[in-house]
Every structure is written in C-alpha cells, then in structure tokens.
Image (cartoon, rainbow, N blue to C red; front, side):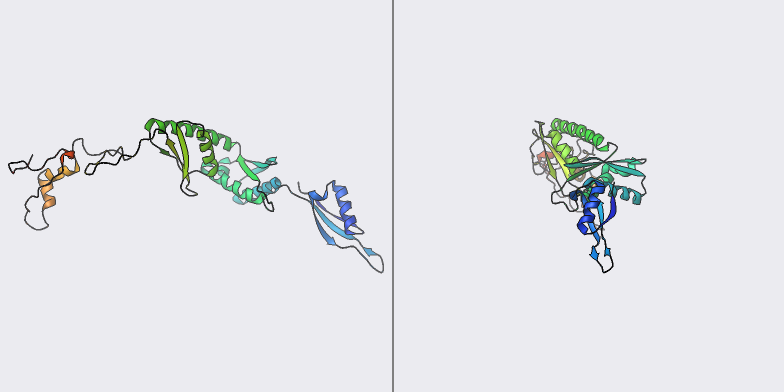
Length: 281
C-alpha cells in the first residue's frame, strides 16, 4: 500500500526526520519531495514542508500496472504478488480467465512482458517477472512435457526428425529441458521470432538418399500424401495409351504428326522399340 503525507519543521531536515519517525520508515524506503524551504521573516518564520512517499516495490509497481491494464481491457480481474525477491511472481484471478490467458497463453505472455518492463524501470540488473493466471502455467508445462516425450518417441520410431509448431521462449525451454537427458534424440531451435520453433532429431535418423535420375520416388518418402495413381501406372504411360497420348502429340489445327519414339529406360518397366521396328503394346 502506498503511503504519503506532508510533514513540516523549522528546517527541511527537521521535517524529514519528523516524517520518517511518524511513518516508521528509513530514508532508503521513501521518496522525499521538498515543497517549501524553511526561512525566517521579520515577523515570525515560514516552516519547511516536505512530502514523504513510501517507495513501491518492483512487484507492487507491476501489480498496479496489471490492474490498470485489466480495467482498460474491460476484464474483471485482480492481481497479487506471490513472491517479490530474486524473482517476482504475480498471480491474476479473474471471472473470465480465458480472456486473461488467451490462445496458448498468448495474452498472458504479453501481460507478463509488459509487467516485466514496468517492474524493471530504473533497475540496472534485470529482475525476472512471471505472471500466471490460476495456475495456467503449471498445467501448460505438464502438457508440454507430455508432448515432448510423445513426439520424441515418434521421431525415434520413424527415424525421422519432427518439427513442432512455433512456441515462445518459455515453452521452448520446457521442451529442450525435458528432452535434454533423452539418449535417443537431440533438439534444436530454428526460425526467427515470433515463429521460432523446435526440431526433434533422432539419433537413428535415416540419411538422405538422393533418387536416381529418371526414377520418381514414392511420395510417402518425400513427405507427401502418397501416389494417387493406381499401382503399376506411371505418368509416362499416357504417351503409350493410344488416343490420349496421340492427342498430345498433334499440333493444333494440323494433321497428326508421325509418332516419335519415346524411350523411358528400364527403370519404369518400358523398353525402346523392338528389333523388328514395331512398338510394344
């Protein structure tokens, strides 16, 4: 609670001492503003006047800011300092916690960022500020730990790396720390903020194998949805299927051109023209 009052004395120093005595505070705990210097006149004297205000803690300043912000946003909420030491922890209680938290904690993270800036005004050494809403962060952390372990197991089973959705720095730290002791995978961060994400890389990751020229690899290996064509049919077969293939070789508005021999090579199961000059069916 902020305390302030005006105190008087024959001199400024006397007024200050009087104020500190009544408030039960030390000079380090207050801010002093001199309102009037004491001076003597021919008839009497003018007393010195000072205003003494108890300094707000960094946490109290952050709480005052958050309460004001919630009022501007039209959210019925009250915040309180849970811890105000090496780290400041603030909890917000609201009748509509979903508005305070936002999707995946986006609103809560924004409030935390602003509260951290406010609480560190005038400080040379940055003090960490954590803003929570009804233990949301604890539940979110548990979810992230489960997600990290599940996706790590998936990466190892498939021998392929797994890319997670973009996360904020706090959530990325949870993923990294969860898998730090996992002997089967390693994690790296990639991308730029705010779209920075984590990649889980299994130690048994399959090396990249370039496809031989002229061979179209299976789309499943390329991360696609699979080959939508019936098995055994290749794109090159269109040129050998009679009318459709011929139509593609006919100039617009002209007579059919002589068929051009097409050699696909043995990789696709087709061969060149037979020795008798005819074409395979």
